[in-house]
Image 1 (cartoon, rainbow, N blue to C red):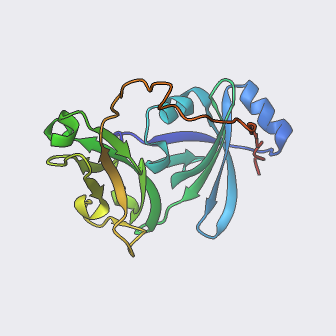
Image 2: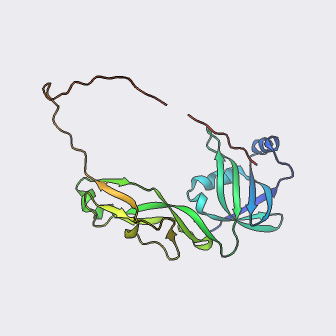
Image 3: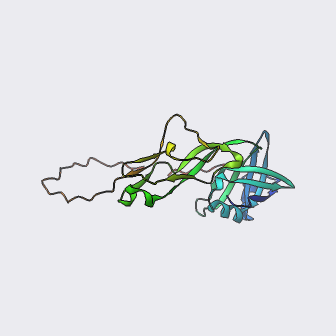
Length: 219
């Protein structure tokens, strides 16, 4: 996660869309800290720093210490909105984390030892069924990633959650079945071009086609 997860914030004296637009013009990001049965705390953060932290990876599973007017708040980013064009952060919702709290978070899966997989070395294709896994863990021990070891897997084999060693204190929220995380599929084989005799006649009846865009309100 990084060694310094301290964020210096300013307390906002005004809220609303107009105040938020003014903050963004001044290179700040409006945000709110809520939870722990306390009143929501409206704050503002440096836009450049927050965008950099977002694109560094692991933003949603990183515990931050937000400093506001001499007080420190341990938080987790629960939601954020991005500018659809510039890809910069427009607003962040932080959730207060109490000492000893247990969280449910989505952890990315990283696959290793693909060169030790007979199936992949023979041309098989790694088919990722789950890019992330929802787990329950202590707030102080959120793993950066879950490691899927492909060693020994051949074409047609599956890597299930039971085949993954999770960090101590981490357990999947799905406990009633041994769900699949990835499989190794057979490589696509190009066959000979069909002759006229082998080609069935197909009548095209018609085609069907289907952006939906939501604008999240701040508060």
